[in-house]
Image (cartoon, rainbow, N blue to C red; front, side, top):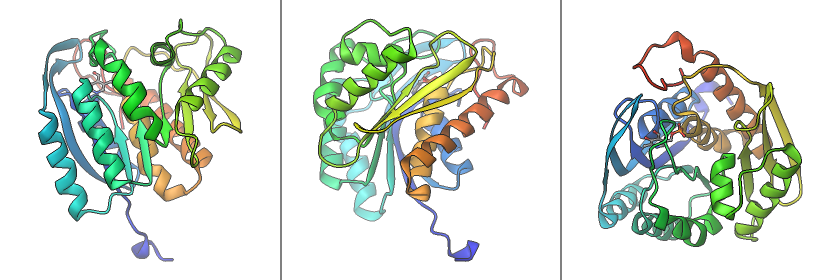
Length: 270
Ligand code: PLP
């Protein structure tokens, strides 16, 4: 196949907007575009935000989130979806319902709960909806360790051995039909390596990369899940897509200090 024959996958982010461009839909579009995918975006929430914090969140009406999804899917064959900040339980239930209807092959869920600044991006009452309505139907779940702790209602773990058990428990919470994966991000563990686990109920793949010291880590979770959505349809091999997505994020973190955006937690550099 010549390069002109290559089919460019169409990927969709359903997430919130961070006007500073470090996280949310804007970060997702950068990662998807850089990785050879075409990016579409459905807006689930607006935030007023800079690198120093979130000063406001404006949820989008669930019916209008549904209308954005339905209008887009009726026209465009979406190859992979990444879900980020949804904010509220009624938006979570709506997104779950519309994706069940349209059935895209890949659905990557980044269960966004708090911003790097520490501000809440998910209402506490919405955790149940995420567990019950959304998680069972996704094909990949990408929590960090604090998010995994909240989802499983247990304290965040402190060792890679404990991480393995968490990955297994999260996989059990997903639908048992079909091939589904947990990408558990271990960046919160101490140590000079950032260790992630990829688990499908059988294989447990450990991926390690050197830890990069920087305060500019805004948008790391968004970037990884968007990279996965871009790469899954292109590699057609989940462990390979995961390795490439992690390598892309590691390089974006390595380049973060070449940018100077704001005085708080600045963005990674795509
Ligand atoms: N989504 C939105 C809209 C955000 O504003 C943020 C953080 O500020 C996130 C997601 C999560 O960001 P991160 O990738 O740094 O976890």
